Length: 337
Image (cartoon, rainbow, N blue to C red; front, side, top):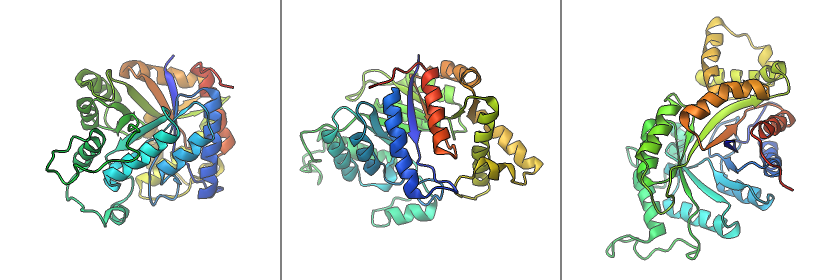
């Protein structure tokens, strides 16, 4: 059976504060560890009223400290927002404290709007174009210590110097991201839950172009999906209505805490709204364990995914936990003591 993991954005709802959302993340991580999930990744987003996850490295330390076996990672650190040396040192500290349990997932986007991105980077030398590759190369050279002798960074040591950087994953939603991950020999996680690019093309392209590296001998591809699983079809559809309304609002530039299913049911949808939601349902997997897998398994097969990573914007925390419990059973995970 395909490996199964969690991507958690710490969703804020109309009934929960950001602080509660972060505590819910810790609670869900403990459950995922007990259920036998492979890894638990947290995201980096800024200035979004429905997402509390803004500092993945801090959350990772908290999650790793209260779990036993599950790998803990960033899904991801948005490299344009950070100095590569800072990323290297923070993740080396995490790796030192929790050896062989940390993942460094890197994203190319800022994870926010343009003005907030500027505020995050205004003390840096901001490039007019995409400087992700330059920052990534700097991160790699800091780890390998292969800066030329005459380079100003040649003498810099990312501390602690005796700890290796955790495994690197590149996150993406396009063919460019897939090709870049293949070229540098990293793991690759494809964001099917918001991508417009075809997941099968991207993930198979990554495998075909993969070059072995110091991090990885063989390609490894994660398929990240948005899923809602419940004991009945009616309950799954009720829970998914929160996601439908959140998608619709986001498409029209409205960023709000997640609405309850009751709030979603009372929303005055137009025919155009319902058509938008119906189109988005192609990226959302909803149902009981049996019906959800009937929809999801063909995508797993076509992408040849090594692992599925599930995110879920379910309004009620207990219902979200139940969704992950049902998925664990469906994927045949072995619970840990």
